[in-house]
Amino acid sequence: MPAPRKHDPQPPAAVTAVGLRKSYGDRTVLDGIDLRIAAGSVFALLGPNGAGKTTTVQILSTLVAADGGRAQVAGHDISTSPDGVRAAIGVTGQFAALDDLLTAEENLLLMADLLRLGKREGRSRAKELLRRFDIADVARQRAATFSGGMRRRLDLAMTLVGDPEVIFLDEPTTGLDPRSRRTMWETVRSLVAGGTTVFLTTQYLEEADQLADRIAVLDGGRIVAEGTADELKAQIPGRHVRLRFTDSAAHGRAAAALPDATRDDENLALRVPGDGGLDTLRGLLDRLDAAGIGAADLSVHTPDLDDVFLALTGHATTGHAATGTDDTPPPVKETQR
Image (cartoon, rainbow, N blue to C red; front, side):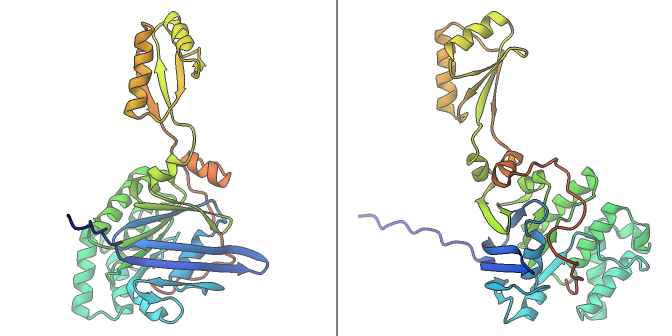
């Protein structure tokens, strides 16, 4: 008799949280959220402004204290071992934390000094990061002269001076042009490939779709859904097959043969509810063949993260990050990376 199969154990968690709560006065920002983020993965926290994303980052990075619940980051408890957490993480906030009077190289060396790296190690680390983030040719230019994309790359490079295990990126591509945003995405992918865990907050749904292994949607201080991008999309109705025809006669006959379809007379198209799987498509085409009808083209449409976001939070998105702060009262100054 064959031995029973052993289930693969869950990968170790880089971040865990149970029942995190935070209020400011009579306003509840976090209302008991639970998280488990696997090491070496990208986790994206989505939500509209005011949902609690930045507060979550601030609590997990020990910038503010939770009112309730518990959490561990890189094996350190945020309440009993905050110094251990700080030594293991990097934080990049919504706005680049650079000294504009210093050059790119001097900003990195300053961070190395703050982390108490030796002089030789600090210079070696700065040189490596300048090259890695493609800013070596402007290493001796003041940060004040940098474009938005260059400032963001330098800011992330400063976060990596201490070689953190976990990086918190709070809306890191806000205000960047599409090319700079994609460059940042490639940087995040390379970090994860090297074993780093990335906790990402964003309002760019495409960003979460492109980068995240798992996504949680935060609304009103609560996690309202969590899963992979595909799992979240599968929760939303609206999957359908679109058939287009070359003439109105074929379109009309197809509509009669497929009474569950929605007509689009202007485009000579039909929208047929279905999951778009092979069995569904085969059955659909068989019905058309039986009626002697040929379609000009066929396409499968599934909900995207915009649909998920709207269905779960009631807030539409425009694909552009909103300006302004997220969810906290007067901002807490970032004191460590």
